[in-house]
Image (cartoon, rainbow, N blue to C red; front, side, top):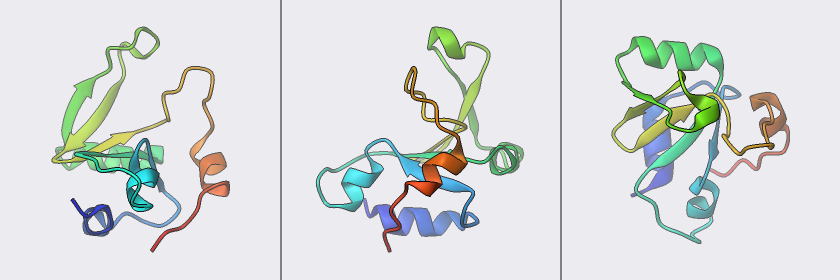
Length: 100
């Protein structure tokens, strides 16, 4: 899978999403992946939800009652889901590298 092509197809607005999980390793040719994890803004999440992406329930105890979205190899989240590490999208973007 070409992560860059898959992300370009989404046509998401700059500044409203960031690739997380294994995505940065894939972008640097350090790993292969079968899915792309993306943290998006609440507005973009809502828009994607309304477009009919598959809604999946979280099974983590602290996430019960919440959903994430999936379509094909793309999974959309509102946060990074790393226990005590919960930066906002804005904080993640401030530390991000832009690749391609």
